[in-house]
Length: 510
Image (cartoon, rainbow, N blue to C red):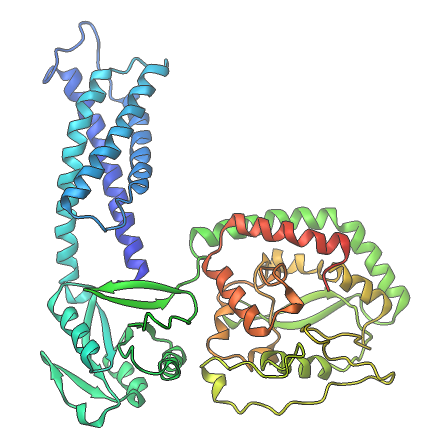
């Protein structure tokens, strides 16, 4: 099942629970004051209005308690679920009794709360069983299913196909792929082996396939990654029946069909409400920083203008969210007319793992760019004074760059040259925290795997910068960027910004 389907089911269940708690509390109040269960209080006129707020508060409280009880995980059977409902409802009811004792704004009946407890437990258990039947009916509807191709018609693939065909789920099995010519045309309960992995692109288009499940756990890792790369190129979702003894892939999310685990890529966390929260944080803090840094802007602009000819700002096209380009701003730190080829050559060496004095190129990730021939190692550019402008041993950066001015060197050492990017943040091109913004000629060398770092706005600082920066290889930087995208939280952004401060205060940026 997709993670978004799980989220929707949990949201539906939470809303249903909240509605049941809200209506049951009001029902208990009506039963108490109408004389159905207990005699009404003499001379007391019952009004439903004062009970609306505590009913709403109880609904929210029950949802939080049920989340603590893991009642939205879907892991419990009917009896275990009923027990946890009763236990969570007991905590909520005790909180309601405390509210009636301490709150003096209205005289709430404690008998209402006592009537409420057995009613809400019974109503919640009943509605959850009805929802379970509703979910099974939805899963049985073909319109709600995801069309799936299974790669592999061996023992594991056939077992997985049998599970998908025999049990209701959101998956609709279209057929199989297998590279064994002898299996072409074979079938399992009417689902045929439609072709080989070389036919993947065509079969996905012809059959409207939503997802590929790779069920060849005994295959070489390189072969599995080739199929993953093909899925990434044609932009179709994929999952793997993994070899659990060799799980060296990127961070994964797991689903399960029957007794078979399925592994897929964990999606970005910076979506929906999280995106809105991050954007609001960026706008507020960037505006404040621009105001506070205005004297530094004036001093830096004057220093640049007085010491070298050319504009104050350096403008460059960079690649941002989902591959969109934007104009990137920095204080100019180089002489006008400097040769960009030095950085371009260095970037190529960095991506292909030839920087840092390691002496050996790192393996390339599988993807579109992996089909390109690996360029030959080029000599490091040397300036007129014989100083290398490539990299020092163990450090992945350009050192002794002859293009940098004296003022530019000061700005770079303190990262103050990055300050104009606050305007990029306000314009929505960047975030305060995120992956390093890429240059188009870097992205040309990316594999499909590397392009995952483009799934969020680039940042002025990021997890890479505070985790070693120039001591890290390109592959390590990408892994940190993907980790950040998958595990984002506002607290993490604040920690990264605080860790960035020493670089600004003590000149440890480079």
